[in-house]
Image (tube, rainbow, N blue to C red; front, side):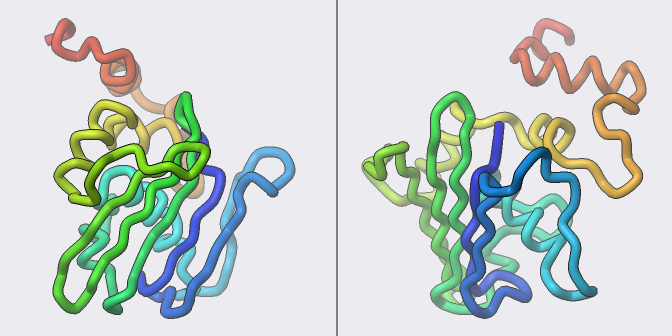
Length: 166
């Protein structure tokens, strides 16, 4: 899976709307840099949160919302191009999720998070596969430096054969 862009507002330190076009970065993206508190980790966690509605270390997108009009919108390619838009009300603690196809047409007939979760489960990688294959912490070798047993678990999950492994 490849993340192409992110727009974010009202999530963590992103009071105003911010956007990053990752597809415009030449070569491989290897780092996001900035001063302490500028939102580097929040930005990366929001990428994951766009697929799972939960961030790896900070809770749900609702937990991170600081405004009524908060949102995270991510364009990604995972076999097909989709835009995932999560609108979050940080005061009422409610959320909606919209999935758009490459042409901008809604994929789902509803914006309920329950419908999004079902769609994501069948169209997106499992959270642990996404984290193990897409992100690595500074100084971490990621998948290649995992112990053999962990690599086997990630591959079994990626291929959908973990039930057979058990």
